[in-house]
Structures are given as C-alpha cells and as structure tokens.
Image 1 (cartoon, rainbow over the protein chains, first blue to last red):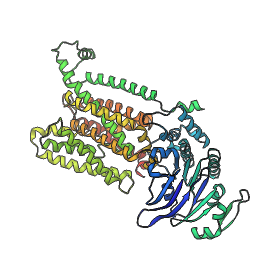
Image 2 (image 1 turned 90 degrees about the horizontal axis):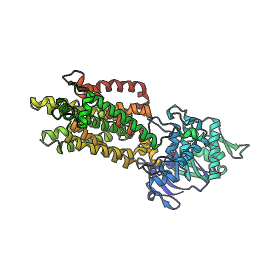
Image 3 (image 1 turned 45 degrees about the vertical axis):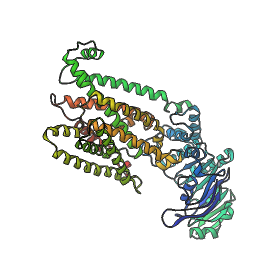
Length: 254
Length: 344
C-alpha cells in the first residue's frame, strides 16, 4: 500500500498534510503520535473509510477509488478501537461476518467459511466464547473476537486502532505475538496505531511518528524512538534505554 | 470441536424449517379466527365453505367468505408488512425501539392519505401513492433531523419521530374536524387502525407489493446484519451502506404507504413482533425477517380477532388493542434495556 502526499481536513485546519508512506508486505508498521496528531484519521484513510482531500492512496498501484468496497474488504481488514453492538450477536456470528466480502448476496456461509471463522477464533483464543453474546464479553474478549473477524476476512493487510488498549499484560503480549506470526507465516502486512510506545518498539518493523498531522520521523524503531523525537512530539521529558530482551528502545517518563 | 461450533450456525434448512413451522401456526390461528365471531360458525361448516361443498345460500357462507376471510387476510398482510418494516427500521437506525408508528412514518403516510382523500382521489391509486410519498418524506425527515452530526443517536431519532408524529396527527385532526359527520366514524376508526374494510380487490393490490418487497429485503439480510453493528464497521466489511440504506428505506416506505392507506394507523406491531422474534431466534436477519414477518401476521390476526369479539357485537379499532399491548411493552423494554440503547 502506498500513500502519496496525503492531505485531509475535517474543518478548516488540516489534520493530515503531505503524508508519504508505504506499507510493505509482511511488515508491521507502528503509527505513533500524541492525541490529535492524526493517527486515527490516517488509519481511516488507509482503510478507505474517508477519502483524502489531497494526494493518492493505492494498493498494488491501483488507486483506492477504482476498487469496489467488497473487493477492498477482501484485501484490507480493520479492527476498530471500539464497537457498539445494539443487537446481540454471538462471537461465532461476529467472526463469520468477516466472510461477508467473500460471499454472494443470497449465499449462506459454507463449511469452508465456518472452518475459517473457527480457526480465526481459535487463533485469538476465543473459541470457548463462540456461543456467548458479544454483549456479555469483557472489552479484552471483544477485542480478540474482532481480531478474529478481521482474520476471517483473509486480508493481505490488517489495520488496528489501539489493539491492546483494553487488554491486560497477558493478552497484550498474545495479540502482538499473533500479529507477528501472521506477518511471518501468512505474509500479512499490519499497520497499527498505538499509545504504547514500548510495545510498538518491541514488535514493529518500522515506526512512523506523527506530529500535528505531519510525519515527524519514520524508520526502524531504534532510529525513531529517541529522546529527541519523543520530547519534541509528545512534549514530555523522557529517558530511552534498551529493552534487555528484545534489544529495542524502551521509554521511561521522567 | 468444529462439529459443536457448526451446530449453532444458521443454515438455509433451519430458516426453511422455522418458516414452515410458523406458517403452520399461522394456518391454525387463521382457522381459529375464522371460527370466532358474533355469529357462531363451526369449524366443520368453515371447512365445507372453504372447500365449496356448503350450500350456496348458507348465510354462514357470506359471513365467512365475504366478511371474515378478507378481513383476516388483510390483517395477516398488514401485520406481516408492519413487522418487516419494524425489523428494517431497527436495523438501519440501529435502534431496537424504532417502529413505523413511533417514528412517525405511519402518521406521515396517513397525512398523505388524508390529503388524497380530501382531494377526492381514489383508493386504487391516489391514496396509496400519496400515502407512500408521505411515508418516504417522513423517513427522510427523521433521518435528516435525527442523524445530522449527532451520529444517529437513538434518543434524538425517537424524539424526532415523536415530534413528527404530533405534527402530522394535528394536521390529520384538523382535516377530520372539518369533515362531515357521516364520515367521522370511518375516519376515526381508520386513525386507530381499521381492518374491517378488507376487500379482495385491495388484497390483490397490496399482496404482490408486500411479498416482493419482503423478498428483496430478505436478500439484504446479511447487509442489514452488518449495518446493525455500525455503518463504518459495515463499510469496512465491504457493505455498500448508502445503497443498501436507500433501497431498503424506499421499499419500506412503499409497503408502509400501502398498509396505512388500507388499514390506518396500527401501532407497535413493528416493535413487539421483531423484538419477540429477536429474543427467540437471535439477531440474524436471515431468520429474523421470515420469523418476524410471519409472526406479525399471526399477531395482528389474533389482535384483530380480539378487537372484533371482545365487546361483541360492537367492535374496537385494532390499533387500540395493539396499543394496549404495545405501550406497556415499550415501557418495559425501555426500563430493562433503555440505558444500553439510549446512550450511544
């Protein structure tokens, strides 16, 4: 996926300006930045939910506007930060919704679709929740069911908006391990927005740091996550040392 | 493991089995309703009348074939349509308390019908067309006022419906107050839902529309499932949200227009029946649409039977019966789950 000189504004002020970015196959791209820096807007543009006002965004050199929504959903899946279900669906039904872009209008899910959804639930460790209503799950369980739904789409790219915000340590680790495995084994590309700089540093291949809707720094975690960049972007004094196990940068607030 | 997982997933055969069972119940309720009434007609006589073996001059034959049967068929069709309308409104507005009556769509449609009557247009074309226009216009108003920038917040939409309802009802009342005395009873009855005017000619007009519309809406089942989880969510999964919304709302307005033109304002059916169906069979529209539509037919036939027998030989407008059941039902829902629904 390539983004060329992307610009977008909601009101008068530009919330994104001159963003050049690419997402390569099999990589995990972390998008960092303070509140209001344009992270979520960028993710929505990458998901084709909002169209950029300036610039062009494409997959395999095909501009987004030439791709039908259903075809797009077979390529790109999104795990939103929050989902509000008004009506009760079971976790199994939610995972199966991921098969929507693969089915024709009056087609029911076949055995293969069920297997895919089943395996998606298994890999996010939510199979035991399959028959429970989404309303009765904890935030962390919901989050994992939505990741299962994204997996059931069998996309090439998965976008995640704060995937671990509701999760405890164990599941934070598991979600990131799962993401890493997917990238390695299935060649899926992942772009994720996060407030957790340490986890982003630890698991992402590349990091983009946004400030006021512009790319402040981009590159491998150890080049981007530096005291100078963070103090400038987040306006917060920090020290950065090395995580002894991963060898990646680790941030502490002073 | 996989077997266990699969047994709870919806299949076409489950949808068909359920629909057939419900159609069986519908047949039973219809038979019971044919037998009940001011004049006593036994089930055996009814069978003879329906199969054409009864003597032609039997007075019961007239009651069954000319009065009760068309009325029951109209009740069935209207209940069917109102429930489908309720299901679709609830899905698209993502609001379990939406119903054509509560949203003001029924009164908007009645407003159209009243104008048509005032202009002297006929019931075969003018009234249904203006009634449809009224429904469509109201849906547009509700969507435009209730959803702008506020992200379709539930309480805003319900309030918008209440206001629109009040406004159109006022206009209708002013029409009624200037109409002649002899038509007052008919108009008032119509305002509270009246199925007694059921005629085979009308049934032939509305039945094809309602059946074809329901089939089209059923074809949107999976899209509606996903739209209930949020429009952005749905777009992410590849649903052409705007298109699905437009087509289904126009179709629903069409059937609401027809239903209101021929039966008046019958409230709460589109609230009660979809809700019960959802509790019994889950939120998947592939089972919800057939279950709620057939359930709606059963419900309204039963309610109308009650309306014409409860104070026999006099009768109540059927809308009074549905409101007696619906208003407490609405309040219970609001009390039990309202906090979850009203907040965004």
